[in-house]
Image (tube, rainbow, N blue to C red):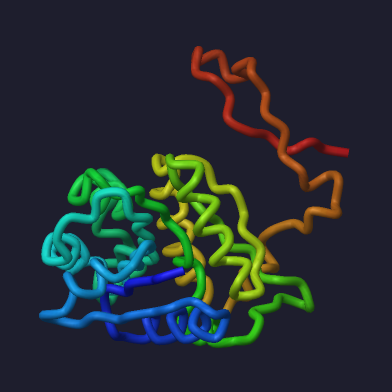
Length: 217
């Protein structure tokens, strides 16, 4: 597969290097070469800081039909907060800037150091990578790229859920900076009492649909 990468930083080098070793053709493009990298790739990874992403996508030229992967986290500099809060997610903004592209959100929950690992494991288990997108074929393509890293693609829903994925990244980054292992705040799947169940009947009398509750023993 031909993969064009918009950017030449840590994420571009980590993901691009691993994909090259998996047998893909990869071309990275920095300032002045975004259009060349985009034209090369069947799949295009946007691997620049979120504040520059929309300008870079515009500079890349027409992206019609291409699978366009957004791996960014739109964090406010110096704070664990999203500059997209209250509005569309970064992935949705990229989709609006490149209406002909098939945008997928993925690879934003781990740093470049993690992606350089071969393969990334958590206690011996392949790292799960949530993938959000509206185009099933594009999601499947990104899922294969996830597997080529030795990871496991996790269905994340449509692109309208990308904001949840970005908010999750911000929350986890806050935990890591506080020295907290994020795994300690999420009950293991093997625990039956940890599994949430959806309840279609509101319980608070508000008329709003209930979201989720946890079964109690």
